[in-house]
View 1 (cartoon, rainbow, N blue to C red):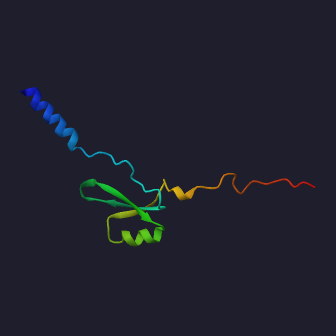
View 2 (view 1 turned 90 degrees about the horizontal axis):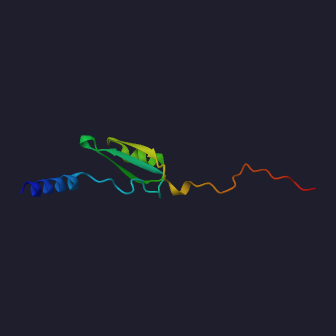
Length: 89
């Protein structure tokens, strides 16, 4: 009987802990709003195209705007612009 009670308690404890989210940042937007919740929690809202737009949404809230490190649109073309070619005469 004790083993059954301990097993149920262990399962309840494991299922009650918050699980990590699979993806915190949305790669479609370059700016995220980090909102601080009560009791130390926080969440991210990545739905802003500029820091100014995010700053207006954060006005009056316990939040800050951050640059999205996983923004998919910020890829540079391969080869780069600094490449100099030699002219053939």
